[in-house]
Image 1 (cartoon, one colour):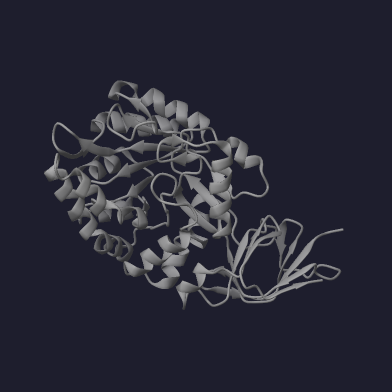
Image 2 (image 1 turned 45 degrees about the vertical axis):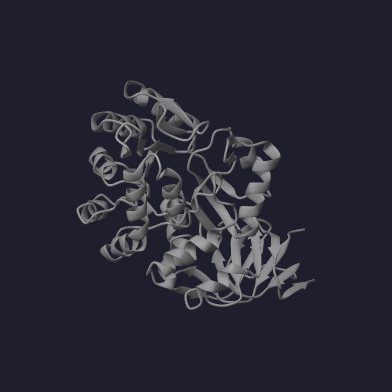
Length: 369
């Protein structure tokens, strides 16, 4: 016998698309009333499950974590409403998690690819420029359609941020990834690395704190989205304070990037750059903070509907994932109020439904038949 959930509230199939009358039959959504009585009735504002577009399940401050920790990270994200994760680089092979029905769906990117001795220890595949193309091809083949480059990091000789690889090597690497059928995203804190990435035909930019007016029209024209990871950028003052004694120029640069973070995100949004929500959980950022990132985007000036869209309808469309549609996977969250009017309602979701099963509840108006 089929397991049926009836959703009696307002269904937001899109940021401007209100509907009523939605059911989950086993693991699929339908707008057609199924025969028989529902097993569960849920009331509230129904949205597609949130997307964390920059998350590291399986990664900790020292690198790879044990399987039980990786599983707990995934469950923490799930219970906060994140039902789709775009992995943005992880040391261990997490494909085993993709076979577990209780965890969010994960789109993997394989390991970070960084310049040797120019990134966090135990995180990345470390290569010199002549080895970049080969490393990109390998990670493209081991992931789910994404490759992650570390585009810049502190150059200790220069005492400041600097691009990790020569522009020509980046162009060849992006071309190689595309040849393998993968998209490329890049960690970019500074200004100069953005020029090289855009010249190379990059598909996405992480952080983008070095965004300048010259970059914005190129991002729009090339349809390159950014994932600002604002709750991670909030750590920049601490990074600067730790670096100050040895690298004062770098410390001043990081503070300046932090001070202009919100202004740059708003300018990008108003110009038409696509912006998606990502927490950067897994290194210094705790898992389960997608609501904080959405609200940080709103605090930066994005309208509430746009901030929610950055982790919901738009993010799913960008990644080629189902939203709320006939026959789509029953992966939804329920809010007590309209999040487009009161985005703070996403902090305490009434319910989280994954693959047609209620997996998390909070002060839920729930009727079990």
